[in-house]
Length: 354
Image 1 (tube, rainbow, N blue to C red):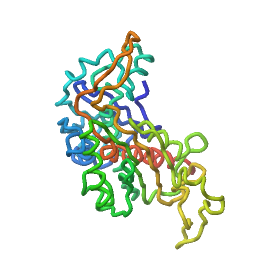
Image 2: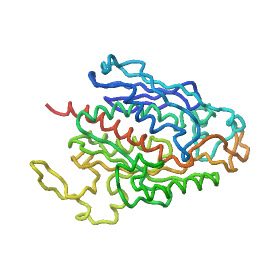
Image 3: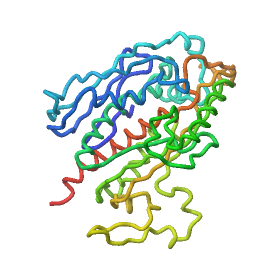
Image 4: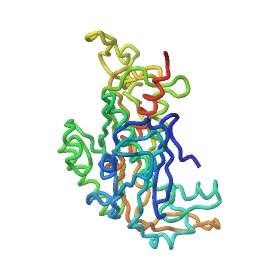
């Protein structure tokens, strides 16, 4: 089972949604980096359940404990192991559907591949697994901060509601992490309407990385945009990734889409940023821009058609505590995956040439 991501800065997540604990092991972190549980907890608090009325009501503190790799507030170069203990897992809601495949979930595909599956909340396929990604991403963010790199994300669109203004300070000031306060309120209303209908909605999360040095990326198979695509599509519920203009690029001609170069205080810059901060799979020094399409939450409390383990056609009603929209909590996960990609490539780039 593929639970490891990265080359030099490498993480392995472990644990199940309704198991006793979740965790992550980070290998390849340089020694001497200032690190504390509070630094990691800041990002985890933005991902955790039970934050507001637009998220799952499951109550988990997601409190991180550092088990290894840090001494007197600094990393030692040894593997860093992080853990949190599940405190509010209620598996009883899943007993009635343990032999049924939930539509939109990985129940059927896990069963066909492994011949066994954890029916309690999806096991490893649950978005609860992303705790380890966000914890590791906080460390990657700390590495990038030494180079002045800043990673942040926000909800650009929810269902048919799109942001029209951008104020970064607004992102964490509203329930949906949208930089447009007017659109944010409309998004909250849309989530609550879907929740009332026992349904869910999806949206688009946009990720930016500022001050990324030029030269990051390992062509030809490990291009920067290819790794970002891999990282983002590995997030549960993500069904599409765009870099720069993305699919809108097809509406332009070549000269329109090309980002012209100019000199600015001895540095090569681009007039526009249609390429999203990379050319040929290598960062060009401009802002990295990516967007992910997040599908509506698969768990909805409405009767749906399905089959059981014996191949009998049945109906299923999924109960339990679920997010009516994944997008607000996907923001810190997307940030973490971007940070993991960039931190890995930043460290790899030190060996690119003498």
